[in-house]
Image 1 (cartoon, rainbow, N blue to C red):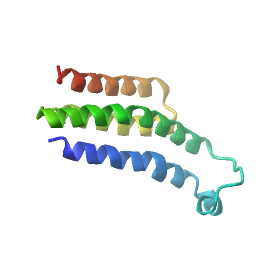
Image 2 (image 1 turned 180 degrees about the horizontal axis):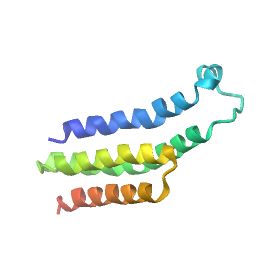
Image 3 (image 1 turned 90 degrees about the vertical axis):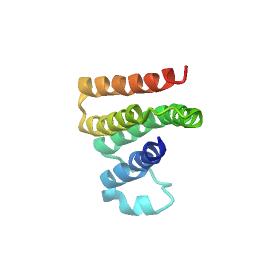
Image 4 (image 1 turned 30 degrees about the horizontal axis):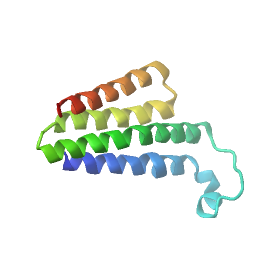
Amino acid sequence: MLNIEIIFALALLLVHVWLVPMVFSLAHAKWLLGARDDVVELSVLTLRAKRAAANYMESLPAFLAIALLLKIEGIDTGSLALYWLSLRGIYLVLYVLGTPIIRSAVWIGSVVMLLQMALALL
């Protein structure tokens, strides 16, 4: 109960922080493999991926705290956690693609999932 969702949430962190920005920065392989002292011009997609990662890092601590509290209390909200995780994955794709309004709706949906998970603790 919630183990898989927590592990996948941490895996999505690696996708956000490492994999997606790296893929969009392959043209700067020397910079990626070096000390990154020089300033390089990053692509629009890389910058979007970095902003999406920053947003994910803002919500991940809340998700992890709520998920761990639910686990400690023995409350099963795995489906809500899975919905949150799915919405966050969709959010990443929409953000990188530059989709404005739908992206915001997906983000709101992820916040609603967090709130529902938290309310299960009451």
